[in-house]
Length: 214
Ligand code: NAP
Image (cartoon, rainbow, N blue to C red):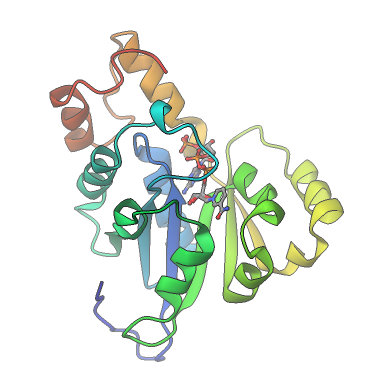
């Protein structure tokens, strides 16, 4: 995957936006844009999960659907890209593999920022090679309104104090929308207009996704 290198300082700052994206929604897009601006990122690459080792695969939409919906959603932003790295992997993928893939590319070693939900990041000490992950990238833990940032810090302190320096918290009011909320609305026949970009809404309709609540 090649990206234009228009950063005069030499070292690119790249956000990796990890998640299931089932489906992607406005909250994810607002998050990526906010992270791009606050952390002065050159690009944000969305990385939909393939076969996450920690999930029941029957309850998640096919990787192809999630990849295509994500691609449709980011189309209009020249700073956003989508990677099929995890989707195409034959075996279950771990974040360490993804980070290694992006940190040692053809265009040198970018500074990596892994962006995902705060709850997922709280579990990082259970992830494969998490100490190496902490060495290779910085984490942006995204929280929804009502999420206790105090509790997040305390939990991190007691489980993984070495992470304090490598984790930034980002509160995103637009994350009041969630993928679960969208799936439930579709299953109930309710509108999802303005909760996700229109091409994604159309894709969900055309492929009959989420008609049965999960
Ligand atoms: P998930 O099931 O998609 O999401 C968990 C929670 O975080 C949901 O509330 C979700 O909200 C929110 N979220 C997910 N991605 C987000 C994002 N990019 N920005 C803001 N909020 C987000 O994801 P997950 O299975 O916990 O995994 C999250 C990431 O961590 C993935 O990239 C996954 O590969 C990685 N991970 C790695 C390991 C490992 O390497 N061992 C283990 C666990 C997770 P929505 O439902 O609205 O998206």
